[in-house]
Image (cartoon, rainbow, N blue to C red; front, side, top):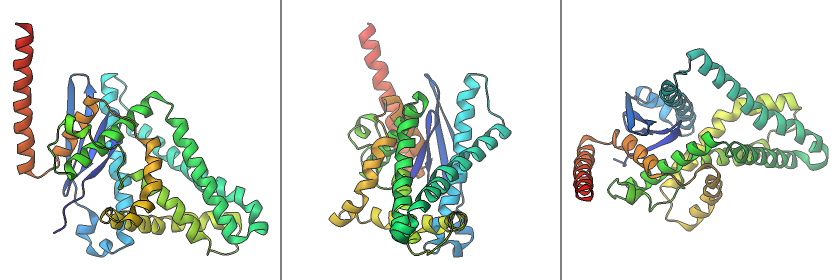
Length: 311
């Protein structure tokens, strides 16, 4: 049986990690307290095996990831908001999601299609698709650079880096400690940022063959085909992550890793600790016990050191 590939995402002041049958959200509620919330997860592909077929499973996985990700973000936002006595309501969060999705469609679908339509007669279908793709990638990079200047988003990017470092540590078979995690890269080939770039590139290729269509038709077709394109991107990520020892695979995933330099930042030690707690919460029981024993030993050592320094 293939080894499970752990993954997750950064949330507000925390990290969410997914395991084979559950997820855990660890949030730095205040400087002294890290809270961990666990929930059972039963992937829909296990309940309906037909949905586990190639391409289709990628579409299903994307939808599941979006739902789980929004739940994790809502939980983390409310934990931080409780400290400030400004907890978000369900309607506020729903409105935020709707606005975010609408903005995404406007920026990454409508605007590139409308702008590229002016070069259709001159450059043909491939040229139009290429211009759309270049605009879309440019808008994405500009958007990330812009929001990355915000203090709160920079902290999310630091937690993103912490998530990657901790997963690297686990996959390398090393003990899950802050010191070990700090040795690893902020970049990871299975990152969602790489996934987005692959989707953008595949969109250029696929829409070269759509043919002569007006802007409204093209926008409708793009939205309709996006799940299938996401499924193809998922299969590429899944396949490439198992072939990283091959030079040509490294070359293909390199642009996605470069792009991650915009969405990840070097984390603080406490942020790495939060990511470790999230991951260990979804590990098998035997591995979790080893981590707990190490933590108890480390806490005892720290207490002895502190006692020696004050004596």
